[in-house]
Image (cartoon, rainbow, N blue to C red; front, top):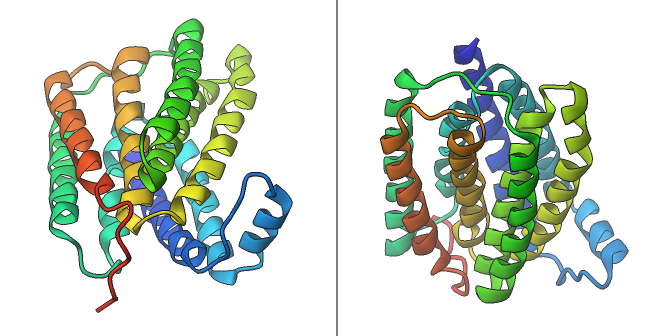
Amino acid sequence: MIALGLLLAIASTVAINRGYALQHDAASSLPPLAVRHPVRSLLSLFRNRRWVVGFAGGIGGWVFYVVALRIAPLSVVQAAAAGGIVVLAVGGGRLAAHERLGVALALAGLLLLGLSLGSHTASSRGSLLAVALWIGGSIVAAGAAAAALPGGAGLGTAAGILYAAGDVGTKIAVVGGVRLWFVPALLACHGLAFVAFQLALQRGRRLATAGVAVLWTNALPIAGGMLLFAEGSGGAMRLAAFALVLIAAAALARATAEPEPARA
């Protein structure tokens, strides 16, 4: 069953990140989106065919992700999802030196995650209070990141933190029973993440916005799997992978204000 969950996670990763790439390309060509004009901004997005295709791909990928979480540990699913940075890098034009470094570090983290899979333990059901605190803290951290970091890097980081909180909420909600009360919270996290993500896409290069969001979305649930769901075996390698992802995010965020290079 874990192998099936891993395959579903890989399919999810490809669908979600190709969708992100299409959304970035579309949003970059649209008039500025504004939180103060939500209806106008949403209509602008949904009238763009490329953006709609990317959005639909993301929704389909999220469905695969939910099924994968139901049958595999959170950290195992995120191991596959961490490869999303490579999907984003393909077809995005020539990469700057720090972008190549960021992608390389992300791949190194993915390798460490893969090596840790053979010694994982099964997930626990998770503490309701601990997960609630994690989600609340994530919302606060996302707001702080958006305020402290410039442009697309701050909004991309905020989106990644919020998507990660939604993923942690999804992991506990799929257990069912009283844990279904987390559904409104995870939907709220995904909704806020969607807003931050779309705003970020217009404020930087693909890897500096969507790439940073993807790295945070993957890195934080890895930590959540260990801390909240007792997925602790292989912890040293996972912690090393987590550190590499953080450095990769910092490298990619440098490109926030740079223009998109011409495609080869």
